[in-house]
Image (tube, rainbow over all chains, first blue to last red; front, side, top):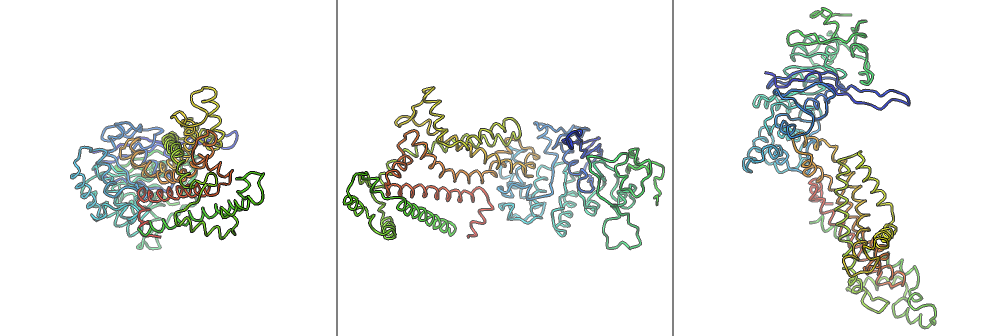
Length: 330
Length: 309
């Protein structure tokens, strides 16, 4: 059952004209992104830094105004005006940011940080019950009870992120957007955190949009994956399909770039050269064609549409041109 | 506790340094006998005067005698009338407090809300207006503002007296002068402190939890912006007293500011020393209070304070 429906959302920024007589420019950070998330499902959103992943996350929750498109959550439109309805919707939509220390008020004790969503949305809750809920949440995320009266600066990075997650879970939201939740943590702590998220998902069944540039992390946590390039989704589908049988040349390059101890040297790796182009002057046609090892003349002219095969969608002329399953080698 | 004692010791050393400097500079700056006795006195009279006040001794002897006396609670006598300098100054203190305390309250009451409002409506015409008024407020010298206020509200409109003391109406213009200048400084610091806090993720998170804008400011933004605001308030206690010197002179207000001006002119050494002592003590004390407030405002500083120096 669909929980979240994202339909063709965009976020464009007007930039001042370059030079004296230049035209006003338009930065298309997110450009026509669509996806959906079912109840309890985790959609991974991957892409290079600057491709619009985080902006997409904030657009989905209505934290920033959209330039176009709509987001529907449980059949209700997610607005961007911060009115009573917007605030009420926050019970069901929560977010976890990358930097846990920045996301915590350094003047508040851990227990109060975790309990604040309850103060906001469940004002009538008796004190004893609130304390019990906070203690329960701390136990859920694996925080020792004696940390309740501590302050954020006294905790380790992993503990802080656990506090942030406990706070996001306090209202039992149906959807949580995780924006690079483990990128700021050590690798060993990352693994603990991912196990924690797995465990929590199994118990509380929230759906999530998991934004990360780290493919291993996304592969581990996601049911489905969407791959973003320059503000657009180029491929999406079930996690294993995306990583085992990628169709889009960009996804192939990303999948090949995952370091592995087991991979033999014989496997051919697609290497991408250069950096993503400036989103202010996006390439014509397929935005990926200047870096694509398999680019054809048509790619520079016509923008490919998403070809959908069951659960799997790819926006590439190689695929829509009929070679749905075979891999074209140059 | 150890932290507190170290701070207290430092405070005493600071006061001692200020008073010593004041003592020496005053004596190097000119002989009070001419200022006190006038130009037409004989050498014998001057010598008698100098002997009577101990001014014939070498400077270092005078200094140690002074320190010795201070340690025994003797702060000297006014050369004008022979009244103990301490009681003379203390008699004027309530008058100065009567304008500086309300002025500080006015500064806070106007400056903090104006700074918050400017930060919340940043880059709007309202914000720019507050910045403009604030820049004007703290670049205009206090005597100019005092004279302009007197010209407008006393001379032209005749709402308040131009000077003197006795009624509440006499208080208005001196308080307004110091208070408005203070408000300008506080508004600027409050604005930048709020802007700095407002960009941080926990403020965005607070709003993303469904908290109203007003509650976000009250619960998260303002308490976190309080440290720099309180710091500037601590400094302002000192600058308010210096402001009082000018304002009391302009409005002929009988406080320690005007007493200081007349005492310096008359080279009434003991009185100047006592005022310096009191003002530096007030500044050091207010900074001490601010330091202790930090611990209350920011749990991180609480930790570093208890660890000690």
